[in-house]
Image 1 (tube, rainbow over the protein chains, first blue to last red):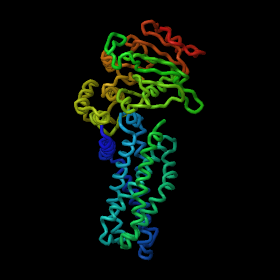
Image 2 (spheres, chains in turn red, yellow; image 1 turned 135 degrees about the vertical axis):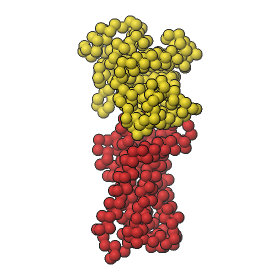
Image 3 (cartoon, rainbow over the protein chains, first blue to last red; image 1 turned 60 degrees about the vertical axis):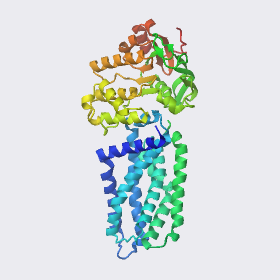
Image 4 (cartoon, each protein chain N blue to C red; image 1 turned 90 degrees about the vertical axis):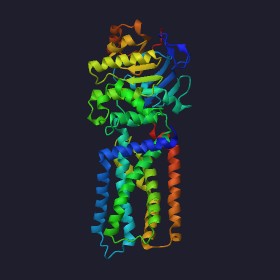
Length: 225
Length: 255
């Protein structure tokens, strides 16, 4: 089996399970919506400039709901020791990891696809004709968060309180991607030219590459007992 | 190809299927398996016995390359698992206490998924054949979460044997099976043995498997208490070893 087919197979399996069980979709979306609504009540956006706070609010919602997705991602493999079945298969274990990253990215992207239009209405946000750049920023930062999160999720699900441990490990490591995501989104909201935030986009891309490469190298040790 | 223990063709020729030297595993300070020397010729069927906590599952997981030994070496079909690991894993079929099955996928989808993971040329055909062999064809389209424990066990066995592994490692394969399913599994394992596949089967139900095995390996507290040809072992001897005190020294193979 080719490396890419193995990635697609693992991601496809997770998506099929999700489409059938709908375990994550409802929880993730509801949780993310709740975060948005809570912030909407907490801050008076008629007084506070949304460009200042909005990006942070959006990414808090994305990342908090992402943690829920990440917790389920490996927990599902640990139940019934399914992960052993995967580890026994003659595929590269990094392909399994990348399949998991792809599935988590898609779950988070689905939440973002619903949440962004709601935020547009709720916070009176305007894209200023930069939809492609907004999508690029969402993709780069979501992949980065999923990449580092999947690695930590693989580590923590073996521990007794892995669901509690995951955010404690993940959020400090995700500070660069959170910072980059919020800064890029702020510039997009403010309608600044690309030259003002190209370096943030580049940083997100670099973060993705570094964490994906590191995880691919480390995943054997992470998954091993 | 050289003949196996029953004159059957043995994949791998004269190269032993399993060659362990001083193989040991501990979890922290707890020694799960004391240093073990074990050579299993290709095509041999080994019945692995022992009380709970004897080290049977640890040994099987070491042989399946799912655990790394704390010390010692392991060679499967003449190769160290570390060298050609993916290719090596293709030759192993492993059933653990857990089924490895996804509740929200159907029986057919589970087998298809594993068939594709193993790169089978016709995963769909292999899945259908495995469902037939497990007598689960009528329920193949149902989610595994709706199966009874016995049905899940039959499907888990089908999954373990789906890719035609040369080395079959089964941990308590009779768990949850009714009498008919257990008989069916016995005949299936005989068929697999006749194909020259090496089998290591851990069970508490030794009465059922003794006659179909070439060799008995009994562990007590991570130490080999008995290693002998199956036809030379009396059931009461096994009972005495299972119920009696653990051996002070490991037993060397005497036949």
